Image (cartoon, rainbow, N blue to C red; front, side):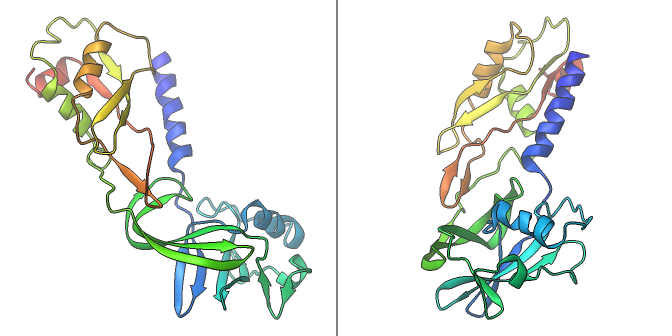
Length: 262
């Protein structure tokens, strides 16, 4: 029963971490229309859309948690909000002149309060990590200070390597091929582990933690075997390596031992 509850718990954690892919806002700069996965309006935009403008709206789209799709435009290095539409009914628009009374001018809103980076996708999607942190091969970073574009740069995330995440069962395969022969000759009950694995920049495993169940006499052996991995997944976001915890269940029983001929 405890094992079942732990599996259910991990299932819901996975949903929370990876979530549902979100509909992107749009950013128009020069003659290009880019999809951005930053959220320039933040909670402020959500409150405006649901409370100030359309408090009775019933759209509850899982791929659009913020409730709206916004269009931004860079004009003469200034960032403007030009449109906010309902996720479910694209004909339903926010009246910017009402929602942004103080900053609305000539059909648009100058985001003169925004001092932050906005990231736009370039190239191939490598990994969908969570609603606002997908990893792309390249990104365009636009840095704004009080609504003014002060710099932009193309960022390279191509050093990202996904050896295990995209190959289900590879972790178990590595384990059984590298654990000492005959290590489980005397096995009285099935062992299930879901280790947390950390590595250095090259992918060499530096730490293995087993904390999802009661410890067994095999924990040391399992940890020592997994520490032999030298090509663990390495992720880069915004040009910098990011720490993340991912693993999969390793099941040790008579069936898996026979499968891998231990």
